[in-house]
Length: 343
Image (tube, rainbow, N blue to C red; front, side, top):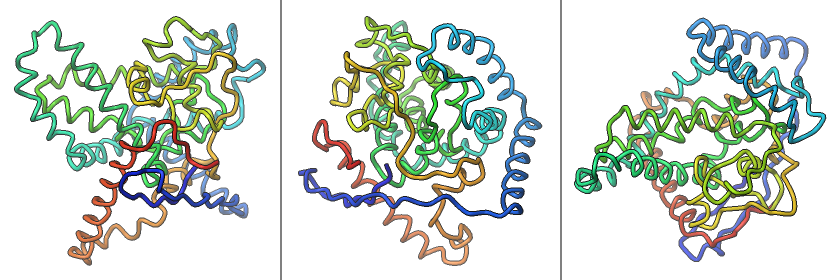
């Protein structure tokens, strides 16, 4: 699904795409495979040594969700030990360490996203909201900003490369939600910065963030419940499975996690009544190991020490990248409703 896109001012129909470059599987000898496995084992070991929270979360989900998946499976015959389940379990056990790395990136993204500017502008309005309404208003605002950040991560190629790791899983279940690049956690950083700047307490904002993360894990479950009556009001596994589907009509849809309101308003809602999602994954080839997946979106970034060796050149490059990113965000906001990338 990765495309090289030329983003231009509206009308968005003028945007030109080129087909994604399909990378072939890397040919490694036994030494290369051994090194990759050793590095992956070191990451997992360091993650568990740093904190057992990821391991505990995985065990809790296994106890609570797997029995429901076995009794009411969405995809019959999908085993607990399905392809690449060990990779997703490795992500789960490594998550405390990976999240720590991602936290640094999240702080940077929160600052350079400038989501705190409209937050500061809204602060006088927020101070007038009755205290009993603050949690509801805060939740809606958090979900609104999260919707747009999630949408940017799908529709802007340079951001998609990070989020593609999460979407590379071809089987959704109790543990698949853990597979994510450590920098993918920056998805909720702008929403967090927005609410803090607007005057909402860090505690309530943190609760919203934790809720989004836990809900996201549960929405990947391999369960057949449709909850049709909830579809217009609340995010469900059915809605999120369509978001992960690699079927053409489902691409660029269902960005909301908690509520589908923003998808309905901005034309990205997709919940057909006559069929259900069955094909998951991404078009581009992503190596099925943690080390290559972490490095995948960083290809072509260059030597990070260049900022020390060539500070002015690096600043110029960074400003150019940021300006281009702003243009792409504008394109995403104003693109025609229902527009799809080429398959």
